[in-house]
Amino acid sequence: MGMTLATGVEMIAREREEQLAVRGFDAAHDDKHVEGELAQAAAFYAHPKGGVIFPETWDPKWNKRDKHRRIRQLAIAGALCAAEIDRLRRKG
Image (cartoon, rainbow, N blue to C red; front, side, top):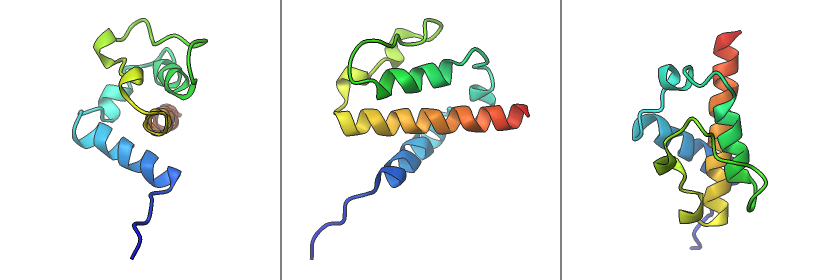
């Protein structure tokens, strides 16, 4: 029987779960990023190369784009978008 590949939505959901459970990037953490940093980081990871800078207020150690393959970069970008959506919804 063949292995079923995860869909993009499943990969993004898993990445977001990892951000929450492993890295501790919960709502309280995300709510501190009020200058659009989550969306900027999402754009940075989503962009193939150049054109978007990593959030200047973040520690450079979190810039791991080049460490990951393209599909993982996009999953991270999607999870960061989800985090920003949730932050904005909490804000009202």
